[in-house]
Length: 198
Image (cartoon, rainbow, N blue to C red):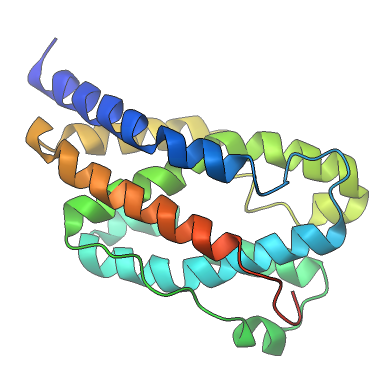
């Protein structure tokens, strides 16, 4: 095993281990895989994700400072398009509350937070199938966010893992702190009561 591969393995193993409880807790409470998912619930969750990305996307960009890497990973516009497809107007979208920033201290913690969102693209396709099954045409028209990177999802994940492998194994703990902070803030935000309009 070369140094690059070993570093990636240490990072991934640590991130998976420290985030597993938070991941399971969040996955089990959103209801996106429920067989009776409603439009109202789905619109609410998309609106909360939009408010989260509105704060986190510029935050992680400022901390990470690599637009070539982050640019293709921006997904706020997908949420905007999905909400528009569900009838949310531009003024309503702009009036949605924005989540307070995740407590991230540096680029390594930002990378840990990005691990959470990049990993979510892998499971998003399962969510997309349930949304389309439960909501029919409305679901199909409003599922670009959960479609991740489409046919490029696997390749994008591998390129993210390669980026993790560029960090020394000693950064794993800091990256883990960022990932945990991300899950905690995201979980809190998504569980807040419904806001007017979404």
